[in-house]
Amino acid sequence: MKKILLILILTAAVLPLFAATQMSLELGVQNTDLSLSYAGNSGNVKFNAKADLNASFIFDQKNGFDIIFAPDLTGNSFVIGGSYLYQTRVGDSTKMIFTAGPRISVKSASWALGADIMTSFRISLSQKIFLGVATGLEMYFAEFKNGKTTAYLDITVPLPKVTVGYLF
Image 1 (cartoon, rainbow, N blue to C red):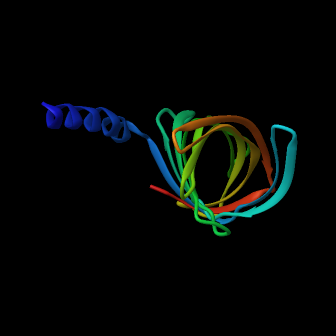
Image 2: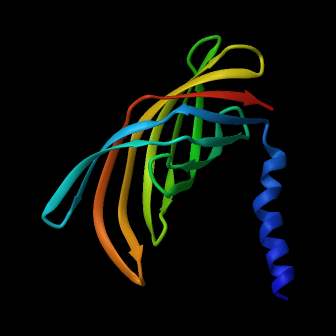
């Protein structure tokens, strides 16, 4: 019964991908940010360097979803997330994309729950290849470590991220 339930869940999760009218894959060639973290009575500022891989699925030329995987190059952690995506055309070769959704940061002994709101511009270099520039707001508000939950607020405004992408 568990196997049948697992197959049904995976089918329900993957089936909408075949209805997508546009799929894209992006590799972040620069993803750095400056963040301010505040927990209890103390705070700190730190610099991060990450590479990221985004996959976008757009269904009706406007609405879709975005999946992100971003390993941290300065530590042993990674970020995974999924977002609602809205796309609008700005010019003949440029699209503006808004995304908002949950994200999880996994570290060696803990993980944190958060959300992000991002805006990006995709500039077509050819019919299939594009250049992306994005920034926004990333927030984390809960950390889970050793069976304990800690509430905190970590707000990050990433420096503009530059990506190279391919449309399928």
